[in-house]
Each structure stands twice: as structure tokens, then as C-alpha cells.
Image (cartoon, rainbow, N blue to C red):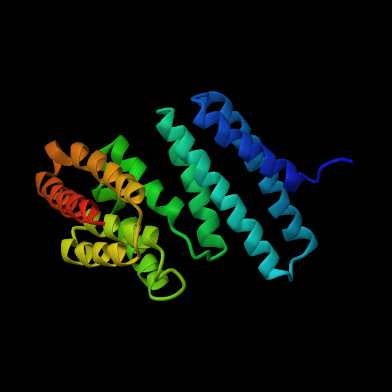
Length: 222
């Protein structure tokens, strides 16, 4: 019996994760790209065949957005930054087109550009403020209990030079009961940004450093 494309996509994504876990990043990227292509075909087919089935299309869009986010992360680990930015951009476009309650690709699209080139901060001001407003609405609704939503909001508020709002977001982050490994994930990104901005934006680097110390202290007692 021949597998349907959705099952093949799931199997490829699982293989990609296993390849990543074993350190074979190039194979993981190849497998994840194949999975992404199948998810794109799935969504395109639904657009043509079921234009009125909004929920079904949104579910397919969520799957594609998730797969693109994973692909972006793989490119990032392989230090293929431009490819990672492109993957996150495509995922961000899906999030926005289908009004998904998600911000993973949007946030990483912004952050990875700044990790690559911190001088792009001013050029990204509009996108940062848009993302803050968007996630601000999401955390008032369906994402209020998601630690990663509050972490995204805090990170973007720091980049938007809104440290008070960032601290409030990280307080909510703690209330959402993240695990120690979740703290580590958030701290790793903040640490990368701090290092990048030390020379060009020392005030921002100082705000990032304050937040890192705050979260390290919170993590120690969590």
C-alpha cells in the first residue's frame, strides 16, 4: 500500500530529527526540505480543492509553518545563516497569511538577521514593533499560557528598546512554568544577541545582560 504524501512528510520529518540528533546535519536538512515540499503540496492542493474548508487549510498551514521553522533551525545549526533566514521568512509569511496563533518563524526571522548582522537593527524597527503588537494580542488570548510566546515577546521588547515591557513579559514567562531546559534555550538566544550588540549597541547589550542575569536567577530556583 502506497503512503499518502502527509504520512511520507511525517516520516521524513522524523528521520530529519533523528539525523540531527546523530549529528548528521546535512542529511537532516535534505530530509526536512523534502518534508517541507510535501507540506507545500498539501496546502496548495487544499487551496485548489477545498477553498471553503478554512479549518482544514489552517491545520495544513500550521504543519507547513512548523516544518519551515524546524528547517530554519537546522540551517542555523549548520551555520547556513542566509538559508535559515529564508526558511524562517517563508514560515513567517505562512503564519501571517493564515493568521496563525504562532510567532516562532517571525521571531526567529528577526533574531537571526540580527545575529548575522547587528547593524540591521534600525532597518528592522518596523518589523520588530509589528511583531510586538501581534504577539501582544496573542498572549492576551489563545497563547496566554505558552511560555514560548512570552519569551518571544520579551525578546522582541528588548530589541525594540522597551525593557520595562520585556521584564513584564518575562515575569509571565516564569508564571507559565517553563522547564530548566526551556530557560536554557531562551538564555542561549539572549546570550548570542548580547555578544553581537556589545560593540555597536552597548545600551542594548546591557539590557540583554540584565535580563540574562534575571532569568539565570529565576532558573536556579525553578
